[in-house]
Image (cartoon, rainbow, N blue to C red; front, top):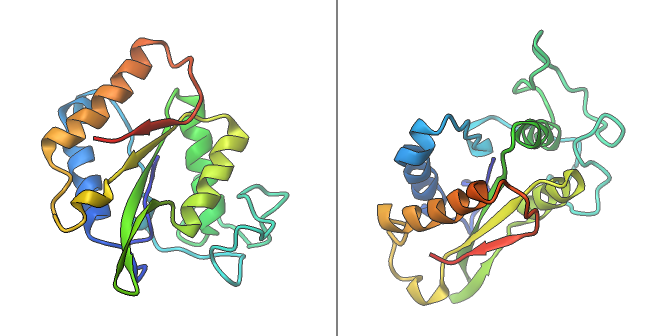
Length: 183
């Protein structure tokens, strides 16, 4: 499950789109039978009037979400679901199939200053849900030093990320602690 800043967020850069595209195209992902879920590719609804209020009760469960979520006959979320409900379903599927969540921490520019790479507001909620489920989380950082380079994520840097993921699988996915990757 990929977790990037919402690509229409005013402080978001194109690197989330570039990273997602390169990650999905990598040979290990293509031939490793991975299902890559990228939530920014779908329309979103919400039960949170502020969309990304960390303190809003919703964590994507039927007990916490107040949106009238519509599922397919197979039980999959539709576009008429709260984004948190839909995202949690993807996290649950990842957990059940030995998957993980990969979060891209983007460098942003605010008020003319380059800010350190950090999670967006929605990503903090996504991390909280993944932690509740005990799902492995990888944080991929883009160094602030390279902020001026638009195409920081290249095939080589994606391969660095894939190598860390491969090592986790070689070690039988035992370590569930947060893993920081700085390619």
